[in-house]
Image (cartoon, rainbow, N blue to C red):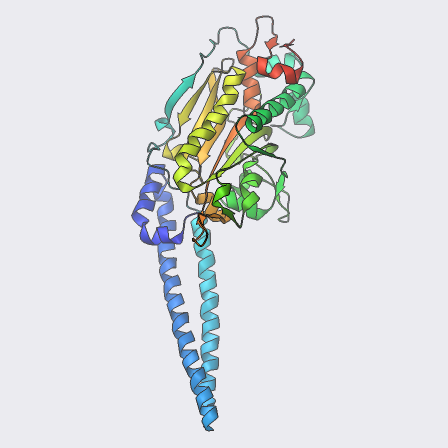
Length: 424
């Protein structure tokens, strides 16, 4: 969320940020409305202060008259009238501030200067690793996975609906192996604190990370405002320090968690629906970092490198893509997507988005730090990244390591966890 001062003092930069995203036409009415509401708010504050000053002066005069034995009925009536007017103005001011808050929630983050302008056609590949396998006779993962009894898509749909998966036998062990490998790597080698977080969060948590109110239709709500199933462990991890002031010595802070993730993805109907490519419930290990503002750029590169390390360990060819402004997520200021190549479907599949949110989420969540004793608290920068999301990683493994006889080699790093060298 932006500070209203940005609307007031840096409106040109805000509009340019929305233009770079390709969203200015849509958001211009919101920005203009916020400018008008801010003017109303400041006038209302001035009016309240003037009337409070007048009431105080009148109250002092009432006291003087009473001491002097003089009649003060007219001034008492005036103070009552001023009090009623102040109450009315403060009520209107409160309503205006609610409207300002709602308007600020509608405006996405401003992307950093390094982010290319434009839509997804302006995304830039910044580096690659490994050599993608030629498609030749590679079968898509849904065929080989079902043939090897690793997962059961029809029964997943039967018991829960389309977009839900039942992993069975070696497939279930593969899911557990990916969780353990990623958590062990990130905690033992990359310095993250492992957390086990709730999969149900309250509305304040979803607002804090930017899922609400913008994307409420894509979320699984429990009804009667009882909470939401998390779309990612980013939500509980980022909100761990909501409404807190951290000491500078605690930064950078690094946390990771495994969780199931739940997304309706209402706007994605009919897109990449085969196999494991787009599902409503999936497993993921998430990385979240807090840092000082001046460390943000370095922390993004560090976090992205941690996510890349998983793909290198698994031996999966991948590329790192810097997203253009129009393809960057609502709350993000800059995002690298990690895409792994799946030869059976002939596509690069996104398996991670590593993002820096500057102070956008921290302002919504009120996460601050004090640089030194006596200094004014300032907002932390938040970052997160999937490291990694399981379904597309599984798809890539089944296609990249597929053998002519239909078996699939288990990546060496996973063998101690899976207990197998080969799915057959």
